[in-house]
Image 1: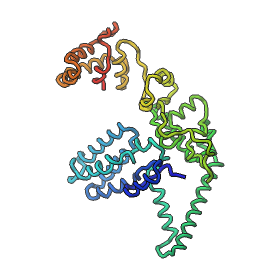
Image 2: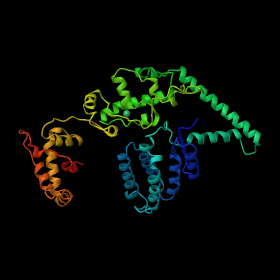
Image 3: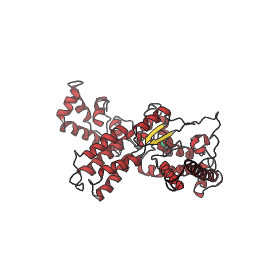
Image 4: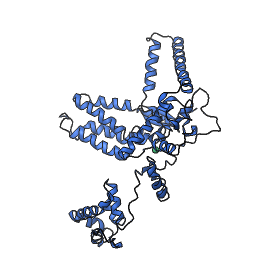
Length: 398
Ligand SMILES: [Zn+2]
């Protein structure tokens, strides 16, 4: 039996040993240890309030669900902690502590503790070594002091392991026999009740509750529950509900199906889940999006699909490129002529920069782009010379 996830502190010898002995396990760093390490470096440099700020920003940073969020939050954190007036005198932009965080943690290890990276692979929600630490404390309690001989230590350890086994067996039994009221009301959970750990059902219900928030906020599923824990994420749950079906047991990672100390699944029944398998669109947050997904599925490459945040099919007239940008900016597509004007304005304001940029390709390109953007007739369709074209207009849109 091999562990699938290993969490350690940044002890290089331990990390190397884990790499050598368990090459296939996911190896992450304990967030608690990292935070403690930084907190110690901050001691004396920060007032109490700013210290609280640090904890807040740091947590927000390592929980970044996307790489864009990570970049934004890192910049925000730097601004709040370093350039903010509340920061104490000794903490300046060139401060060694911020450099320390970047150099020692963010740069080399972000992929081992920031959500966007670690949730790409199974970690079952474990982000700290706290469970081990608490067993360590537990063992100390059993040992009751340092005056133990080897055989009494062995006996105490056995006693502790047995008591822990009893706890686990009890939780297995509860998962197999009890039905929580909050789980019963979800028909789509029917096939999983008493067949997976109660904790997993709780995670699925939490995820289900996110669907409404996503819908209201116009957000899309980040698939984190699926990729990190092998449980259906919001878009998949939505799919089951829309199709009036239940989540099948095979769609739950074997980790959650283990309700006794036997094998979690017979050897010939391999799990369907595969870390790194294509995730598809994150977009089934409402049935209204299904036709758009079906229409564009074949033209959006598989690797790009998980990053698609929304699909809006604008009116296919001669201004559709500009309509798309309007929609992308969160305004109505009918404002396409405002987009044309804004792009024209940008071209004229920074003429020198754009001329230099376009002239790398063709000396005449600036003038061509400039004249192609100017079109404001809302009645007559724009001739092809005024259509949005990629990459020329695309550079500006980006
Ligand atoms: Zn999803």
